[in-house]
Length: 92
Image 1 (tube, rainbow, N blue to C red):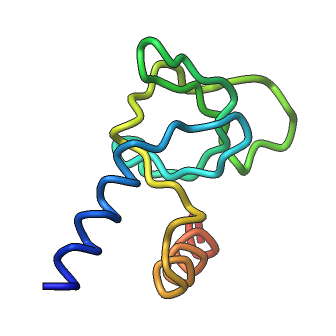
Image 2 (cartoon, rainbow, N blue to C red):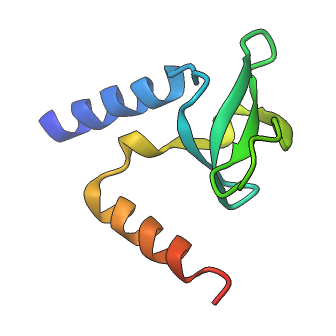
Image 3 (cartoon, rainbow, N blue to C red):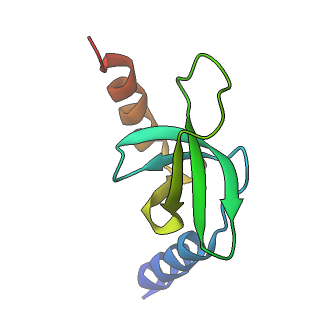
């Protein structure tokens, strides 16, 4: 019983989280890691800037729905390790 309750609470927290400028997120449709550049609370969308951008050129991807984001600070350590390995081997 206890585990089901905590899973429900955890899911509610993920769904209700409002992104903030500067949050590190993974966008599932884009399959990449970004920084939130701006937030549109009314439309529940964000503009995203790639983490690997060499210059601060503003938001690259615009109008991305919140529901497609994973907040990287909420991943467990094994998921973060897998992401780091995947990102370090991309393009090799």
